[in-house]
Amino acid sequence: MRSAGFIRVAFAVVALAACHADTAIAPSEPKQVDRNPNFPAYLFANYTPVELPGAGTGVVSDINDGGDAVGIADGAGAIWRGATHTKSDLPFIPAAIANDGTIAGNLDGHAVMFKNGQLIPLDSASSIATAICGCASETVVGSVEVNGERHAAIWVGGVRIDAGVPAGGTFSEFTGAANGHFVGNAGVPSIAEDGVFGNIEPQAFTWSHATGWHELSGGYSAISFVTAVNNHGISVGREGHVLIPNTLGIEFDSQGEIAQFFASDPQILPEIVPDAINDSGTMAGISYTFAGGFGSIALVIGPGGGASILPPGNPADSTTSINSSNVIGGRSGGKPVLWVPNP
Image: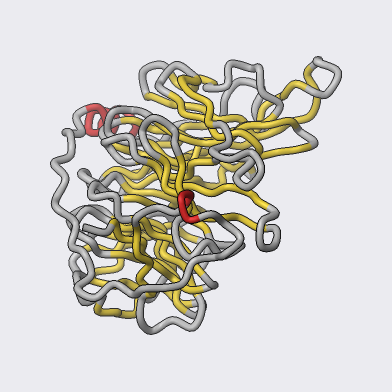
């Protein structure tokens, strides 16, 4: 199903220009922390974690190329600006921030945009904003409820494009947008343990207004997800068996899998699962590990796939975003944090 403004807005989608990344602003006094002694020193990345002020608990949802971060602080929306990380409250829950400072987020079950100090509702229907195009801040993606079914949606200039669902699907959502590239997940019949099609499970897709939905796993995965895409159309995610989901990190191009990520250290980092990617191909993600207590360990992952632990290596640390200068946003010790590369 498409909105009445689809034809007009589709041209705006195609015409999105490439981003020109700004230089990220590093913190003036990064915080030095101890490292988890359960991990050998050689596995740690040359990064410093910086806890953002004004939050007992929380998470960084996204960071732009100017160094501004948005997220959740003690259950409320927040933005931290610049090298001093000056915190301001937001009247909604932010999901992503563009390079010009425009923020996509959610308020009372509806997708919203915050631009130049103005809160702009994007949809009157039940909807969720998940990402914003970093260089084309009028383009927000997420999902919307249509006749009781969740559909992937794009809002361009506040006008909705309803991407519907793939053939045989029951729901869809967009999770990333960059330079005209759109990625997301949709529930479609998936391969069961006996090799035949079984239950409806999420699968990773790309979408375009010209060709519609294209399944990235090629139908060979029982379950798959895509979480982010860069300006070159390279996206990252994970796939696995229906009974053991989210076990293998994957890199996709517009047609399908181009790389799988394997353990840096099988005894300590048995999995490498990227969640975010920048234009240089550097990724942020996690590994599930038993070392020092079971949980997710935050990682920086090089373009070639080699992974290093982001200090301090706490179980339950996680990443959400990475900008053009390899500054990574996420959560460490239950608090919103930026990991900054050391000079």
